Length: 244
Image (cartoon, rainbow, N blue to C red; front, side, top):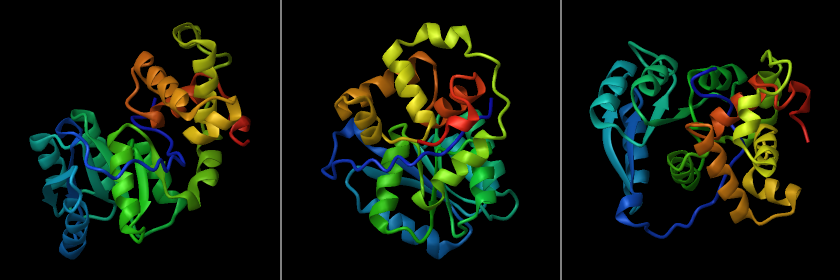
């Protein structure tokens, strides 16, 4: 299974009030442009629940700092000297519990696809508004997956068609989950957000969040990203069922 997975249109809007001390999010910024790093730092450091704990100017430095400081989220540029963001993402995820949010100026399927394979939990264009960057960091830190909405559906379609699923759903998977949790996992794999899942199943959004959390815990998954990969690779969802 890939180290990360597919990136979903989960633009969950969270409360902007300061959370408790235990809810603080630590962030490492990796970008080869000093002005970009400074801009991200100013945006994020102004939030009461976010701490910027380091900056890296290339991929190698990003990996070294991530290993040393164990941030909750790494903001990872793609084009960096010495080691690109894809390689750095793989190394960070292989050795830490950090999550990676890839930031790029390129709205390209190829870049998103490679970020997906590297295991990133999110993908956002650098020209996204400041409030979306902050929301993205919080979403990824919370275990949600996020991608710029402009490339979501076509990416799901392209990626899932490349997977060779099992002939039938893996029994161990179905045995671990309740019928409702299986329903939620299928809808996650189709790219639905929590509000969309709630509408589809005619249940409260808070109930969906509970089911999602239980699915991830029972299957020992890092986030929704890995849940999608598992659903397709085990045959729970067929590649031609990604659409609504």
